[in-house]
Image (cartoon, rainbow, N blue to C red; front, top):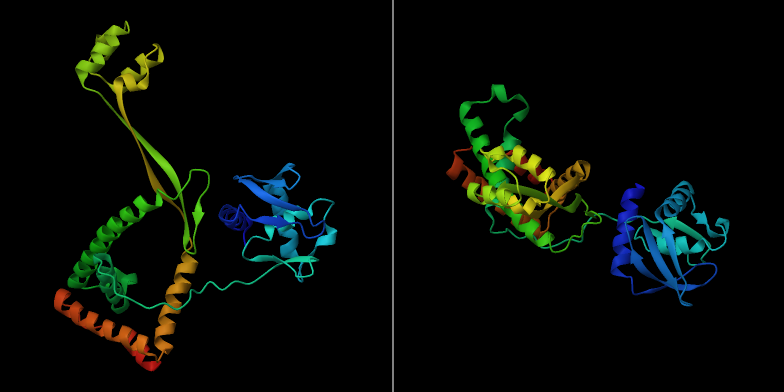
Amino acid sequence: MRFDEVWHTLLEELDASSSEALTTPTSRDRFRVTDVQEHRVVIEFVDGKARPLQREQFETLFRRIADAEDGFELDRLPPEADVYAAVLGQHPELEIGEDATVVREVERSDDPEPANRTEPDLDVYADALLLVDALERHDVTALEDAETETLVNLYTLCSDVQRNANDLRTDVSDVLLERLSHDRPVRSSYGSVQRTSRRTRSLKDDETVRAVLADAGIDPDRVTSVDPEKVDDALAVSELTESDVYDVDEREYVRKAEVDDERKETRLQGLKDQLAASDDDEADELRAEIEALEARIEELTGFESGSRFRSHSSAGR
């Protein structure tokens, strides 16, 4: 595990359980987490004494835990440092042993619990399945050898997926904005996002700008064309504010910060393998959906029904 990932996961866990009382493993002192920041965690003992715990110290302890095959022995910690172990132990992949003598890494399964599959009534879902079918049946690594009809179909499907996926991304972004703060990114299995802002501005109408400049003792003819660069020069030598001559629009949005392509590829392959090897009713229903989809593909796009995925599935039955 990278410590950057460990740290942000730990902060999320502490945010969610900040009201819970914790106990240091060796000195048995009780305390609570009172503040979670990007570079430190602030705690308060039951006697009211507050203490900041620095990220760098957590990283040092984590490195020692990672290097220890059977866990890091807590009696090797300096006096009063066991509080770092108590806090770090709140991470879901780290734990303090029952005898409170070691802190170690624990394995956590990334595979989600089985869930009932449903077919969402979304354009992007249908378009994505159509595109997957096309990609499985055509060699896109040699597009120059593909037939014109195939290229037209691929281009059309890619365009539809992009448009509909962007619509869904916008809807998701609107909800995420209510849940994200500016101080740190939020991570998931496939990547992370963070809240940021984009600032744009546009000049007000010429009459307004010229009148404001004249009132400030600036000859409007200096910016006859109301050129933004000339206006900025005028602002630099006057007491006018930016909002006097610009309509400023600042909007917040969600920016993609990281993508774990390896994780995505592993999960997708796992879904294929799971379907190919399964004999239960749910897998049969999904195979039926795929067959129905292939019929739709032939009807809507003129594609021939794909056989690769179905043959893999049949082989596992």
